[in-house]
Every structure is written in C-alpha cells, then in structure tokens.
Amino acid sequence: MGLTEIIIEKIERSSVDWRIGASGFRNLKIQGWMYKQYGREEMIKEARELEQTGLLKIKWESYDFDIGEVKFQLGDQEEFYKRSGKIPKRDRIQQQEDYVKNWLACISSPWLKAYGEDLQRDLEKGKELDLGEYNQQLFHCLEELDCLREPILKKVFSKYVFGGSKVFENQYQDAVIRIARRKKADLDDNMDDHTILRELFIEEYSQEMSVKGNLVLELEGKILDLSAFVYGVVLTSATIEKAGIKENQKITKVVTVENKANYISMPYEDNTLIIFSHGYFSPKERVFLKRLYHVLKDKEVQYYHTGDLDFGGVRIFQFIKKEIFPEVQPFMMDVNTFERYKDLGEKADEGICRKLRGIKEPVLQNLIDKICDEGLVIEQESFLVPHRKAGN
Image 1 (cartoon, rainbow, N blue to C red):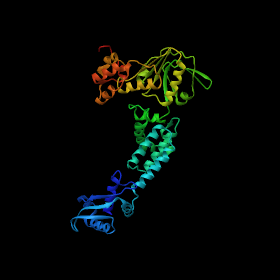
Image 2: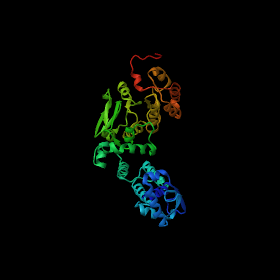
Image 3: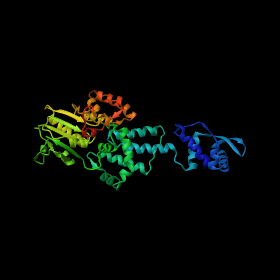
Image 4: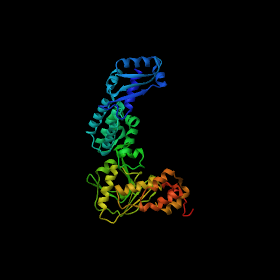
C-alpha cells in the first residue's frame, strides 16, 4: 500500500485538497526514496493495479522499470482511503472539532477558552489535534483546573484527578504551565513555575503569610494583636481566609519585602506592618491584603516595597502597585542604593536589559536606566552584607 499511502500524504499536506468538495487532478512525482522505502516491484505493481481501476494514470520514465509520475483525481480520494483503511482527514478533523467544541462548552475561565479557541483555529487550518490518551487526560486536567475556586495541594489535586499523587507533576504540570504562560493574561512573564501554579490554585504546600508589626485581627470571637510578636508571626491559609481585619488599626506604614532574609532582618517598628511577599503574592494573599487596604483607605498610610534591583524586582513592584496597593512607592530601590552595593552586583543578561528598557515605571525609571547602563543587577540580600559603607 506504499503508493496509496504516499498519495494520501500528499493530499493531507495540502491546505485544501483534503476538504469536502475538493476536485481536480494532482500529479505525484515518484522519487528514489519511495522505491527504497516500499520496494520498486511492489510500487510498480500497485501503480498498475490502481491504473486498471481508473484511480490514476502512469507516466513512465522507462517502461516496466521506472515511473516518472502518476496523476490522480481528488474526487477519488475516498477510494484511496478505503484501500488504506485510514479515516479521511476531513472526518478526523470533524471528530477533533466536535471534541474541542464539547470541551469548551464545559469551560468558563477566559484563558482556557482562549486556548480552546486557538485549537479550533488550528483545526480550521487543517492542523490536527492528537486525541490520544495523554491529551484526553490533559483536557480533563484543564477542566478540573477550571473548577478550582480555592487553593488545593498539588498532590491532593493529582490524586483526585489522576488517581496518583505524583501523576500531575510528572506528566502534566509542564504542559499546563506552558498553556497558562501563553493564554492567561494576568500572569507576569517573570513568574516562575511555582508562582504560576499558585495562580491556578495549585499549591506545593499550604499557604502561609509572614508578617511583623501592628496588625489587629479578629478570629472566632477573639482579638489578636500581632504587635506582641515583635519578631514576626506566620498566618496560615485558614487564618488569612477567615480572620477579620479590625477597623481601628494603628498602622501608618506598610512595607512589603521580596526576600525572606531581608524580611527577617527588618526590626519591629511601631505603627508599621512588614510583610514578606516571597516574590509575587498568591491569590489568597492578595484578597487578604486588599481587605487590609480597604480598612486603611481613609487613614494616612504610606506603602512601600523593597526588592531585588533587577527585572524581577521591578515587575513585582509593578504587580503590587496594580493588584494590591496603588500608592506603593519603592524603598531601597533607587540609584543611591544601586551605587552603594554595585560591587556586589552580577552581570545582567542582555535579554534582561532589553526587557527592562521596555518597562515604563516613572518612580523606578532612574533605577531601570542605571541597571541597563551598568549592565548589573543586585540581589536584595546584598543589603545584608556586613560593614557596607556608602562609597565603599
């Protein structure tokens, strides 16, 4: 069936020949690799049989030994498919379109709808979708992700969806992250894989928020004054969700800190709340902090963020400004800080500098220009190196 398969492959490579109603003649030049793959005698024998049935015409290079090309009609492609036992491409595409359409009918998340619509456009162009077991399981996984409204531990999610606690991580996690990076509009391009999973409500471990300072909560009828924990305290996921934020807060300054070592080193300060952001705040943390912002909105409160002097630090600052605290200002994210610690800096990748130059953030613009001009980035932990003096 070598020649029949080659003819079908030629039809299916075209953007139009496989479609319903396709007509006209097509020529297929017989090449040496075809003889090598399928055998010369077998190819010639098959060509003669097809010619006798009226499915093609042979143009000989040397009679009985070498075929130059064959000519066939697109209207006969059904017969070629019958001979091969293969489902016609138009029927396969239809099955795949129906599958995606039915899947989309179960989806509500914009990013997953966008992904499904991309698949539909590909199918319209004739690009097939593999509906083997792996992809069907992937679609099932995406459908379950679409249903999540609260964080769930990754292993628990995997056990529920696949029956095994490590199946998601080992087989489907990378694919899910790739799709989310392409289609989920509210993701930042600087987010790592762990952060992206959190944005999808998949947690490596239970969420915890580290805070230090004057924050008063109410939980199950009890008032919790966190100022007593001068070295900081960790709020669990359930606490973040269920605790009420009292109206009469003594907070006049809120500082978010990107890196844990810097958070730990910052001393307790009256009327100040220090919060460890661990990079990007998770969805549940953002909800909690927006509630705090609402409580403080009529008070005179200053908001600051301190982080790495690099692309990631700038993007995290912008994320906090956009998603949580609109009035946030940079703290130790300026040219003076850069100059003080630049001998501890690391060479910046050229691609990072290109990305940085594309960012427009007025309060950080001088720092952005300095990073790009110097070609250096500085991790926030550098601020903790002992015996640093300005100019040294």
